[in-house]
Amino acid sequence: MADSAQAQKLVYLVTGGCGFLGEHVVRMLLQREPRLGELRVFDRHLGPWLEELKTGPVRVTAIQGDVTEAHEVAAAVAGAHVVIHTAGLVDVFGRASPETIHEVNVQGTRNVIEACVQTGTQFLVYTSSMEVVGPNTKGHPFYRGNEDTLYEAVHRHPYPCSKALAERLVLEANGREVHGGLPLVTCALRPTGIYGEGHQIMRDFYRQGLRLGGWLFRAIPASVEHGRVYVGNVAWMHVLAARELERRAALMGGQVYFCYDGSPYKSYEDFNMEFLGPCGLQLVGARPLLPYWVLVFLAALNALLQWLLRPLVLYAPLLNPYTLAVASTTFTVSTDKAQRHFGYEPLFSWEDSRTRTILWVQAAGSSAQ
Ligand SMILES: NC(=O)C1=CN([C@@H]2O[C@H](COP(=O)(O)OP(=O)(O)OC[C@H]3O[C@@H](n4cnc5c(N)ncnc54)[C@H](O)[C@@H]3O)[C@@H](O)[C@H]2O)C=CC1
Ligand SMILES: C[C@H](CCCC(C)(C)O)[C@H]1CC[C@H]2[C@@H]3[C@H](O)CC4=CC(=O)CC[C@]4(C)[C@H]3CC[C@]12C
Image (cartoon, rainbow, N blue to C red):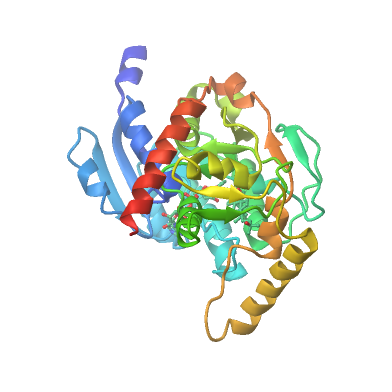
Protein backbone atom coordinates (compact mmCIF):
# COMPACT_ATOMS: atom_id res chain seq x y z
CA MET A 1 0.00 0.00 0.00
CA ALA A 2 2.73 2.46 1.02
CA ASP A 3 4.76 1.41 -2.05
CA SER A 4 1.87 1.96 -4.44
CA ALA A 5 1.18 5.36 -2.86
CA GLN A 6 4.83 6.30 -3.28
CA ALA A 7 4.83 5.17 -6.89
CA GLN A 8 1.72 7.22 -7.69
CA LYS A 9 2.41 9.92 -10.24
CA LEU A 10 0.75 13.23 -9.52
CA VAL A 11 -0.72 15.94 -11.71
CA TYR A 12 0.25 19.48 -10.70
CA LEU A 13 -1.24 22.70 -12.02
CA VAL A 14 0.63 25.99 -11.71
CA THR A 15 -1.46 29.07 -12.48
CA GLY A 16 0.60 32.07 -13.56
CA GLY A 17 3.29 29.54 -14.46
CA CYS A 18 4.89 31.86 -17.02
CA GLY A 19 5.40 34.79 -14.64
CA PHE A 20 8.56 35.77 -12.75
CA LEU A 21 7.85 33.46 -9.80
CA GLY A 22 5.73 30.97 -11.75
CA GLU A 23 8.56 30.04 -14.12
CA HIS A 24 10.81 29.26 -11.15
CA VAL A 25 8.06 27.15 -9.56
CA VAL A 26 7.60 25.23 -12.82
CA ARG A 27 11.32 24.55 -13.21
CA MET A 28 11.69 23.66 -9.52
CA LEU A 29 8.85 21.13 -9.72
CA LEU A 30 10.49 19.48 -12.70
CA GLN A 31 13.82 19.30 -10.88
CA ARG A 32 12.71 18.47 -7.36
CA GLU A 33 9.34 16.72 -7.32
CA PRO A 34 9.93 13.01 -7.89
CA ARG A 35 6.21 12.17 -7.85
CA LEU A 36 5.42 14.55 -10.70
CA GLY A 37 3.66 12.79 -13.58
CA GLU A 38 2.13 15.74 -15.41
CA LEU A 39 2.72 19.45 -15.06
CA ARG A 40 0.05 21.82 -16.31
CA VAL A 41 1.17 25.40 -16.82
CA PHE A 42 -1.75 27.81 -16.97
CA ASP A 43 -1.22 31.43 -17.92
CA ARG A 44 -2.78 34.22 -19.91
CA HIS A 45 0.51 34.61 -21.80
CA LEU A 46 2.48 31.45 -22.46
CA GLY A 47 6.27 31.76 -22.64
CA PRO A 48 8.23 30.26 -25.57
CA TRP A 49 10.65 28.62 -23.06
CA LEU A 50 7.89 26.11 -22.22
CA GLU A 51 8.61 24.31 -25.50
CA GLU A 52 12.03 23.10 -24.33
CA LEU A 53 10.43 21.54 -21.23
CA LYS A 54 8.13 19.39 -23.32
CA THR A 55 10.98 17.12 -24.38
CA GLY A 56 11.68 15.90 -20.81
CA PRO A 57 10.36 12.80 -19.04
CA VAL A 58 7.45 14.62 -17.35
CA ARG A 59 4.46 15.55 -19.47
CA VAL A 60 4.26 19.35 -19.59
CA THR A 61 0.93 20.76 -20.76
CA ALA A 62 0.74 24.45 -21.59
CA ILE A 63 -2.72 25.92 -21.15
CA GLN A 64 -3.46 29.43 -22.30
CA GLY A 65 -6.27 30.69 -20.12
CA ASP A 66 -7.60 33.41 -17.89
CA VAL A 67 -8.24 32.86 -14.18
CA THR A 68 -11.21 35.22 -14.38
CA GLU A 69 -12.95 32.74 -16.70
CA ALA A 70 -14.39 30.09 -14.37
CA HIS A 71 -14.89 27.49 -17.11
CA GLU A 72 -11.28 27.77 -18.30
CA VAL A 73 -10.02 27.33 -14.75
CA ALA A 74 -12.30 24.35 -14.11
CA ALA A 75 -11.12 22.63 -17.29
CA ALA A 76 -7.47 23.12 -16.30
CA VAL A 77 -8.00 21.97 -12.71
CA ALA A 78 -10.01 18.83 -13.55
CA GLY A 79 -7.93 15.78 -12.70
CA ALA A 80 -5.12 17.70 -10.97
CA HIS A 81 -3.99 16.52 -7.53
CA VAL A 82 -2.36 19.78 -6.50
CA VAL A 83 -2.85 23.40 -7.56
CA ILE A 84 -0.22 26.07 -6.97
CA HIS A 85 -1.99 29.36 -7.60
CA THR A 86 0.56 32.10 -8.31
CA ALA A 87 -1.33 33.93 -11.06
CA GLY A 88 -2.01 37.48 -10.08
CA LEU A 89 -1.98 41.05 -11.23
CA VAL A 90 1.00 42.68 -9.51
CA ASP A 91 0.38 46.35 -10.01
CA VAL A 92 1.26 49.05 -7.52
CA PHE A 93 1.90 51.69 -10.20
CA GLY A 94 -1.64 52.37 -11.39
CA ARG A 95 -1.30 50.58 -14.72
CA ALA A 96 -4.51 48.56 -14.26
CA SER A 97 -7.82 49.73 -12.81
CA PRO A 98 -8.76 48.73 -9.23
CA GLU A 99 -11.64 46.72 -10.72
CA THR A 100 -9.29 44.70 -12.93
CA ILE A 101 -6.92 44.03 -10.02
CA HIS A 102 -9.85 42.82 -7.94
CA GLU A 103 -11.22 40.70 -10.76
CA VAL A 104 -7.92 38.88 -11.40
CA ASN A 105 -6.69 38.55 -7.82
CA VAL A 106 -9.95 37.97 -5.95
CA GLN A 107 -12.42 36.54 -8.48
CA GLY A 108 -9.58 34.57 -10.09
CA THR A 109 -8.77 33.00 -6.73
CA ARG A 110 -12.45 32.29 -6.08
CA ASN A 111 -12.61 30.52 -9.45
CA VAL A 112 -9.59 28.39 -8.54
CA ILE A 113 -11.15 27.39 -5.20
CA GLU A 114 -14.51 26.55 -6.78
CA ALA A 115 -12.77 24.55 -9.50
CA CYS A 116 -10.98 22.49 -6.83
CA VAL A 117 -14.27 21.87 -5.04
CA GLN A 118 -16.18 20.94 -8.20
CA THR A 119 -13.54 18.69 -9.70
CA GLY A 120 -12.25 17.02 -6.53
CA THR A 121 -8.78 18.56 -6.30
CA GLN A 122 -7.72 18.37 -2.68
CA PHE A 123 -4.54 20.45 -2.30
CA LEU A 124 -4.17 24.16 -2.94
CA VAL A 125 -1.14 26.36 -2.27
CA TYR A 126 -1.78 30.08 -2.74
CA THR A 127 0.91 32.72 -3.36
CA SER A 128 -0.14 35.53 -1.08
CA SER A 129 2.12 38.46 -0.18
CA MET A 130 3.66 40.29 2.76
CA GLU A 131 1.45 43.14 1.57
CA VAL A 132 -1.50 41.36 3.18
CA VAL A 133 0.05 42.44 6.48
CA GLY A 134 1.75 45.68 5.61
CA PRO A 135 3.29 48.20 5.55
CA ASN A 136 0.04 49.78 6.68
CA THR A 137 -1.23 53.21 5.69
CA LYS A 138 0.16 54.66 8.94
CA GLY A 139 3.73 53.65 8.06
CA HIS A 140 4.19 51.54 11.22
CA PRO A 141 7.41 49.49 11.06
CA PHE A 142 7.17 45.71 11.06
CA TYR A 143 10.51 44.73 12.59
CA ARG A 144 11.65 41.08 12.52
CA GLY A 145 7.99 40.07 12.69
CA ASN A 146 6.50 36.61 12.32
CA GLU A 147 3.10 35.15 11.45
CA ASP A 148 1.83 35.85 15.00
CA THR A 149 3.14 39.39 15.35
CA LEU A 150 0.34 41.82 16.14
CA TYR A 151 0.22 44.54 13.50
CA GLU A 152 -2.52 46.90 12.45
CA ALA A 153 -3.09 45.77 8.87
CA VAL A 154 -4.88 48.68 7.20
CA HIS A 155 -4.91 48.86 3.42
CA ARG A 156 -6.30 51.26 0.88
CA HIS A 157 -4.39 50.40 -2.24
CA PRO A 158 -6.16 47.93 -4.60
CA TYR A 159 -3.23 45.48 -4.75
CA PRO A 160 -2.82 44.71 -1.01
CA CYS A 161 -6.60 44.87 -0.57
CA SER A 162 -7.04 42.24 -3.28
CA LYS A 163 -4.28 39.99 -1.91
CA ALA A 164 -5.78 40.18 1.60
CA LEU A 165 -9.26 39.28 0.34
CA ALA A 166 -7.94 36.43 -1.80
CA GLU A 167 -5.84 35.05 1.03
CA ARG A 168 -8.88 35.06 3.30
CA LEU A 169 -10.91 33.15 0.68
CA VAL A 170 -8.16 30.52 0.43
CA LEU A 171 -7.85 30.06 4.18
CA GLU A 172 -11.62 29.94 4.71
CA ALA A 173 -11.90 27.28 2.01
CA ASN A 174 -9.70 24.92 4.01
CA GLY A 175 -11.81 21.92 5.08
CA ARG A 176 -14.51 22.36 2.45
CA GLU A 177 -15.69 19.11 0.98
CA VAL A 178 -14.50 18.59 -2.58
CA HIS A 179 -16.14 16.38 -5.20
CA GLY A 180 -15.70 12.81 -3.98
CA GLY A 181 -16.15 13.72 -0.31
CA LEU A 182 -12.59 14.52 0.81
CA PRO A 183 -11.66 17.82 2.48
CA LEU A 184 -9.86 20.63 0.66
CA VAL A 185 -6.48 21.44 2.24
CA THR A 186 -5.15 24.93 1.64
CA CYS A 187 -2.31 27.14 2.78
CA ALA A 188 -0.99 30.57 1.83
CA LEU A 189 2.63 31.62 1.38
CA ARG A 190 3.51 35.27 1.89
CA PRO A 191 6.70 36.31 0.09
CA THR A 192 8.30 39.63 0.97
CA GLY A 193 9.80 41.51 -2.00
CA ILE A 194 11.11 38.80 -4.33
CA TYR A 195 14.37 39.23 -6.26
CA GLY A 196 16.34 37.06 -8.65
CA GLU A 197 16.47 36.06 -12.29
CA GLY A 198 13.53 37.61 -14.13
CA HIS A 199 12.92 40.50 -11.71
CA GLN A 200 11.72 43.28 -14.01
CA ILE A 201 12.03 46.16 -11.53
CA MET A 202 15.68 45.25 -10.88
CA ARG A 203 16.31 45.25 -14.63
CA ASP A 204 14.57 48.62 -14.95
CA PHE A 205 16.79 50.11 -12.21
CA TYR A 206 19.85 48.71 -13.99
CA ARG A 207 18.85 50.24 -17.32
CA GLN A 208 18.03 53.53 -15.64
CA GLY A 209 21.48 53.53 -14.00
CA LEU A 210 23.16 52.84 -17.34
CA ARG A 211 21.24 55.71 -18.93
CA LEU A 212 22.45 58.01 -16.12
CA GLY A 213 26.08 57.14 -16.80
CA GLY A 214 26.37 54.48 -14.10
CA TRP A 215 24.84 56.48 -11.23
CA LEU A 216 21.76 55.92 -9.11
CA PHE A 217 20.70 58.47 -6.51
CA ARG A 218 19.68 57.58 -2.99
CA ALA A 219 16.08 58.47 -2.22
CA ILE A 220 15.40 56.41 0.92
CA PRO A 221 17.41 56.47 4.19
CA ALA A 222 19.73 53.47 4.59
CA SER A 223 18.17 52.85 8.02
CA VAL A 224 14.84 51.70 6.51
CA GLU A 225 15.14 47.92 6.34
CA HIS A 226 13.38 45.54 3.98
CA GLY A 227 13.40 41.78 4.13
CA ARG A 228 13.81 40.38 0.62
CA VAL A 229 13.71 36.79 -0.54
CA TYR A 230 15.35 34.98 -3.45
CA VAL A 231 12.95 33.67 -6.10
CA GLY A 232 14.52 30.19 -6.08
CA ASN A 233 13.81 29.86 -2.37
CA VAL A 234 10.25 31.11 -2.79
CA ALA A 235 9.75 28.49 -5.52
CA TRP A 236 11.30 25.81 -3.33
CA MET A 237 8.98 26.70 -0.45
CA HIS A 238 5.99 26.33 -2.79
CA VAL A 239 7.16 22.90 -3.95
CA LEU A 240 7.75 21.69 -0.40
CA ALA A 241 4.47 23.08 0.91
CA ALA A 242 2.58 21.43 -1.95
CA ARG A 243 4.30 18.13 -1.28
CA GLU A 244 3.76 18.17 2.48
CA LEU A 245 0.15 19.40 2.48
CA GLU A 246 -1.08 15.84 2.07
CA ARG A 247 0.99 14.29 4.86
CA ARG A 248 0.61 17.20 7.28
CA ALA A 249 -2.90 18.35 6.41
CA ALA A 250 -3.99 18.77 10.02
CA LEU A 251 -1.02 20.98 10.85
CA MET A 252 -0.68 22.96 7.63
CA GLY A 253 -4.30 23.30 6.49
CA GLY A 254 -5.56 26.88 6.75
CA GLN A 255 -2.13 28.24 7.72
CA VAL A 256 -0.09 31.18 6.45
CA TYR A 257 3.69 31.19 6.11
CA PHE A 258 6.01 34.07 5.37
CA CYS A 259 8.58 33.20 2.69
CA TYR A 260 12.05 33.86 4.03
CA ASP A 261 15.70 32.98 3.53
CA GLY A 262 19.11 34.24 4.57
CA SER A 263 19.10 37.42 2.46
CA PRO A 264 20.39 40.37 4.52
CA TYR A 265 18.05 43.08 5.82
CA LYS A 266 18.84 46.32 4.03
CA SER A 267 17.09 49.31 2.56
CA TYR A 268 15.48 48.65 -0.81
CA GLU A 269 18.18 50.63 -2.62
CA ASP A 270 21.15 49.23 -0.69
CA PHE A 271 19.87 45.73 -1.27
CA ASN A 272 19.56 46.34 -5.01
CA MET A 273 23.15 47.61 -5.00
CA GLU A 274 24.28 44.13 -3.91
CA PHE A 275 23.60 43.20 -7.54
CA LEU A 276 23.83 46.49 -9.40
CA GLY A 277 27.17 47.42 -7.76
CA PRO A 278 29.02 44.44 -9.26
CA CYS A 279 27.38 45.35 -12.60
CA GLY A 280 29.14 48.72 -12.51
CA LEU A 281 26.54 51.05 -10.97
CA GLN A 282 27.11 53.35 -7.99
CA LEU A 283 24.58 54.68 -5.49
CA VAL A 284 25.28 58.33 -4.86
CA GLY A 285 24.80 59.74 -1.36
CA ALA A 286 25.15 58.31 2.13
CA ARG A 287 21.85 60.10 2.82
CA PRO A 288 18.87 60.81 0.55
CA LEU A 289 19.69 63.59 -1.87
CA LEU A 290 16.22 65.10 -1.61
CA PRO A 291 14.36 65.91 1.62
CA TYR A 292 11.48 63.51 2.30
CA TRP A 293 8.84 66.20 1.85
CA VAL A 294 10.07 66.78 -1.72
CA LEU A 295 9.59 63.07 -2.47
CA VAL A 296 6.11 63.24 -0.95
CA PHE A 297 5.35 66.21 -3.16
CA LEU A 298 6.74 64.51 -6.29
CA ALA A 299 4.82 61.32 -5.51
CA ALA A 300 1.58 63.31 -5.13
CA LEU A 301 2.35 65.19 -8.35
CA ASN A 302 2.86 61.89 -10.18
CA ALA A 303 -0.50 60.66 -8.86
CA LEU A 304 -2.19 63.83 -10.04
CA LEU A 305 -0.54 63.63 -13.47
CA GLN A 306 -1.56 59.99 -13.78
CA TRP A 307 -5.15 60.94 -13.10
CA LEU A 308 -5.14 63.96 -15.44
CA LEU A 309 -3.41 62.14 -18.30
CA ARG A 310 -5.37 58.90 -18.00
CA PRO A 311 -7.82 59.71 -20.83
CA LEU A 312 -4.86 60.38 -23.16
CA VAL A 313 -1.93 58.25 -22.11
CA LEU A 314 -0.87 55.84 -19.36
CA TYR A 315 1.55 57.64 -17.03
CA ALA A 316 2.77 55.13 -14.43
CA PRO A 317 6.16 56.07 -12.93
CA LEU A 318 7.80 54.05 -10.12
CA LEU A 319 7.31 56.85 -7.62
CA ASN A 320 3.79 57.32 -6.28
CA PRO A 321 2.43 57.82 -2.76
CA TYR A 322 2.01 54.08 -2.24
CA THR A 323 5.44 52.93 -3.48
CA LEU A 324 7.07 55.75 -1.52
CA ALA A 325 5.28 54.63 1.65
CA VAL A 326 6.29 50.99 1.12
CA ALA A 327 9.89 51.86 0.28
CA SER A 328 10.13 54.19 3.32
CA THR A 329 8.76 51.77 5.92
CA THR A 330 10.77 49.06 7.60
CA PHE A 331 9.29 45.63 6.92
CA THR A 332 11.43 42.66 7.97
CA VAL A 333 10.41 39.11 8.74
CA SER A 334 12.06 36.71 11.15
CA THR A 335 10.32 33.38 11.51
CA ASP A 336 10.86 29.62 11.41
CA LYS A 337 7.23 28.57 11.02
CA ALA A 338 7.72 26.95 7.60
CA GLN A 339 10.77 25.13 8.95
CA ARG A 340 8.79 23.78 11.91
CA HIS A 341 5.66 22.87 9.95
CA PHE A 342 7.08 21.33 6.81
CA GLY A 343 10.85 21.23 7.09
CA TYR A 344 11.59 24.20 4.83
CA GLU A 345 15.23 25.27 4.66
CA PRO A 346 16.38 27.68 1.95
CA LEU A 347 17.79 25.74 -1.00
CA PHE A 348 20.04 28.61 -2.11
CA SER A 349 22.46 30.40 0.21
CA TRP A 350 22.66 34.17 0.13
CA GLU A 351 25.97 33.90 -1.79
CA ASP A 352 24.37 31.66 -4.45
CA SER A 353 21.29 33.84 -4.70
CA ARG A 354 23.45 36.93 -5.09
CA THR A 355 25.70 35.38 -7.74
CA ARG A 356 22.80 34.05 -9.77
CA THR A 357 21.06 37.41 -9.67
CA ILE A 358 24.19 39.34 -10.66
CA LEU A 359 24.75 37.04 -13.65
CA TRP A 360 21.17 37.56 -14.73
CA VAL A 361 21.32 41.36 -14.37
CA GLN A 362 24.53 41.43 -16.43
CA ALA A 363 22.97 39.30 -19.16
CA ALA A 364 19.68 41.24 -19.10
CA GLY A 365 21.59 44.55 -19.29
CA SER A 366 23.75 43.54 -22.22
CA SER A 367 20.80 42.13 -24.16
CA ALA A 368 19.12 45.54 -23.80
CA GLN A 369 21.89 47.35 -25.68
N1 LIG B 1 7.04 40.09 -7.17
C1 LIG B 1 7.01 40.14 -5.84
O1 LIG B 1 7.89 40.76 -5.19
C2 LIG B 1 5.91 39.45 -5.10
C3 LIG B 1 4.89 38.75 -5.74
N2 LIG B 1 3.91 38.12 -5.00
C4 LIG B 1 2.86 37.35 -5.63
O2 LIG B 1 3.46 36.33 -6.41
C5 LIG B 1 2.64 36.02 -7.53
C6 LIG B 1 3.49 36.05 -8.78
O3 LIG B 1 4.00 37.37 -8.92
P1 LIG B 1 5.14 37.72 -9.98
O4 LIG B 1 5.71 36.48 -10.51
O5 LIG B 1 6.00 38.74 -9.37
O6 LIG B 1 4.26 38.45 -11.08
P2 LIG B 1 4.24 38.25 -12.65
O7 LIG B 1 3.41 39.35 -13.20
O8 LIG B 1 5.61 38.08 -13.19
O9 LIG B 1 3.49 36.86 -12.81
C7 LIG B 1 2.11 36.74 -12.72
C8 LIG B 1 1.66 35.80 -13.82
O10 LIG B 1 0.25 35.67 -13.73
C9 LIG B 1 -0.26 35.74 -15.05
N3 LIG B 1 -1.61 36.28 -15.02
C10 LIG B 1 -1.98 37.55 -14.73
N4 LIG B 1 -3.29 37.68 -14.88
C11 LIG B 1 -3.78 36.48 -15.27
C12 LIG B 1 -5.05 36.00 -15.59
N5 LIG B 1 -6.12 36.79 -15.56
N6 LIG B 1 -5.18 34.71 -15.94
C13 LIG B 1 -4.10 33.89 -15.99
N7 LIG B 1 -2.86 34.30 -15.71
C14 LIG B 1 -2.70 35.59 -15.36
C15 LIG B 1 0.66 36.68 -15.80
O11 LIG B 1 0.55 36.48 -17.20
C16 LIG B 1 2.00 36.30 -15.22
O12 LIG B 1 2.61 35.31 -16.01
C17 LIG B 1 1.50 37.02 -7.52
O13 LIG B 1 0.35 36.41 -7.02
C18 LIG B 1 1.98 38.13 -6.59
O14 LIG B 1 0.91 38.75 -5.94
C19 LIG B 1 3.95 38.15 -3.65
C20 LIG B 1 4.91 38.81 -2.98
C21 LIG B 1 5.97 39.53 -3.64
C1 LIG C 1 9.12 50.56 -6.68
C2 LIG C 1 9.52 50.65 -5.22
C3 LIG C 1 10.91 51.27 -5.11
C4 LIG C 1 10.99 52.64 -5.73
C5 LIG C 1 11.03 53.72 -4.66
C6 LIG C 1 11.61 55.02 -5.17
C7 LIG C 1 10.80 55.59 -6.30
C8 LIG C 1 11.61 55.99 -4.02
O1 LIG C 1 12.94 54.83 -5.64
C9 LIG C 1 9.55 49.28 -4.54
C10 LIG C 1 9.91 49.41 -3.05
C11 LIG C 1 9.28 48.25 -2.32
C12 LIG C 1 8.65 47.42 -3.43
C13 LIG C 1 7.48 46.49 -3.06
C14 LIG C 1 7.85 45.52 -1.95
O2 LIG C 1 9.00 44.79 -2.32
C15 LIG C 1 6.71 44.58 -1.63
C16 LIG C 1 5.92 44.04 -2.77
C17 LIG C 1 5.22 42.89 -2.60
C18 LIG C 1 4.35 42.39 -3.58
O3 LIG C 1 3.56 41.48 -3.33
C19 LIG C 1 4.33 43.00 -4.93
C20 LIG C 1 5.45 43.94 -5.19
C21 LIG C 1 5.77 44.85 -4.00
C22 LIG C 1 4.54 45.74 -3.75
C23 LIG C 1 7.02 45.70 -4.32
C24 LIG C 1 6.73 46.69 -5.49
C25 LIG C 1 7.86 47.69 -5.74
C26 LIG C 1 8.25 48.46 -4.48
C27 LIG C 1 7.10 49.35 -4.04
